[in-house]
Length: 151
Image (cartoon, rainbow, N blue to C red; front, side, top):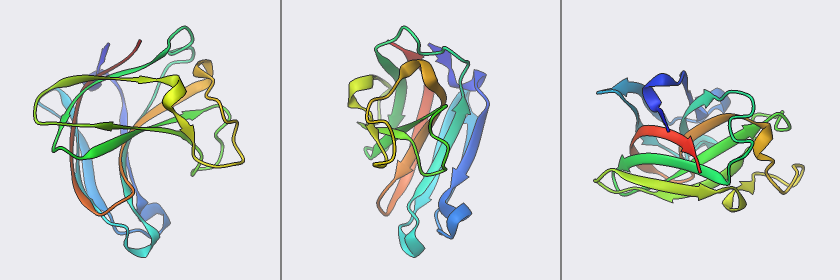
């Protein structure tokens, strides 16, 4: 697995489209910390940390593995591929968090397309970025990601 501190993370929020969620994503104590307030007001509802991955990163894999802890909320992984051109296109799968560090395995078959105009099946060899996302409901986000890899 690749330590989260070794990836180049970018913070994104719904403010790019008029939402009002606020937060941050930064490396703290050697791990990625995504935190803030997610608000569905004004048609918003997400904060995200996203990193590009090398070409072929998941070519032979059967899924994604994360080492995470959090505040008991449900979070999501958003995968973008070379075929997801529009900002609202991604493949999504949720995962649960708890106060203790845990490894979470997310098989490719569990990722769903965000819209009807996308291929229904994820092609792992096409993955170009991975995002960890607090999404879809009003809540306080507090997610820690120590490492990211494939299974």
